[in-house]
Amino acid sequence: MNILQDILGAPVAKAPHPRSVLLRGQTDPVSDFEQAVVASGLAAGKVPFAVSNGTVAVELAARAVLRAGDLVYVPALTWQGSAWPVILAGGVPILYDSTPGSPLGDLEWVDKDLEERDARGAALPRALVLVDLYELVADRRKAQDIARKWRLTIIADCAHSVGARFLDTPIAAWTPLSTHSYQTSKFLSASSAPGSDPAEGGLVLADPFYATDIGTQVSCGRRPAWAGPEWRPMQAGNNRMPGWTARALTKALKEFPARHAKAVATLNELRALKIPGFAPVSADPRASGCVYKHVRLYSARSFSGLSARKFARALSEMLQTEVVPPYEPLTHCAVYTPHTCPALTVEQQRAVDPRKYSAPWATYWHNNALCLEYAFLETEGACEQLQEAVERIRARADALVVADI
Image (cartoon, rainbow, N blue to C red):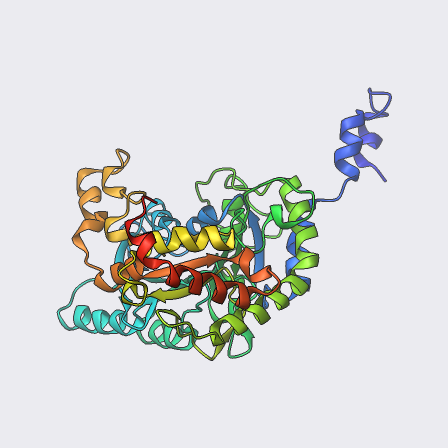
């Protein structure tokens, strides 16, 4: 029964507008993608929210947690998209260094810093941004222990680790909030589906406690239809994922398990490949399935003093794949200069200035490690190709040292 027609009579329009019929009858590709993420097991019981890109995903997660001026631990060795969203959400990043044995952030330092702050009665940070890097998964058990001890909320930036596991559990299960990036360089992206164009995309995986806040922010601050009395108004923009991106990602997700399994197998073979002067970085044996890039530590002494930059260019030419150093540390990164943002007050600019932090180990990894892009992990005979290419460079290292490359 149509109550409005009972009161008002038949509609004035003779028929609905054709576009109205189309919009009412079509399925929602974004919801379809979110449901596909759940069906794939990647959500691990969290609520998925597809958004425009990975940086926005981190920002929305941070906005659900932070209040203005809250301190947040962020690793120094990461893309600026792990830190700048914290500032956009009103937070103040504290940059923490890597360790001598790994490019990953030093969680022991975080714990000690919290103890020192607590001892002197200083303000304690509210959140910890945990970043998985290249093929390395951050220690979820350690991070969880620190979070419980100091009442921190963990936001896990999983841009590099879609499909990874820790202690044989999907990594999303370990933290209340985690984010994905589906930017074109990532292993799972809209452009990884055959016939798809390059595209952006991101995902927030949230505990139900944070779901209403995330859902509100995704769509211009509108109250989600399913929200309960916990809903609160939140200023937000249009952070939705485009429908065509969602369709391409749904298609790519169907092919992801087979691609991922093959890449993981190749990565395990590469990790076992010992090459003098170009050693694989040790990975946590409790973790698996992180396949963004393969990381190795380079020693110029094994190649007649050939610089890491020249070695990378030569190896890239031999393998016809990208070979690059790890990220430039945020302490002195050309694309992370929040202290120059005119939207921040002078006081805020000083608070977020990354130059006040030191990250010697992050700098060490940037200067001495090299990363092979994930496409190489999908190459037949990757181990043989890598070994042959490196030995050819070693044999001709003297010529490369003086070459203008």
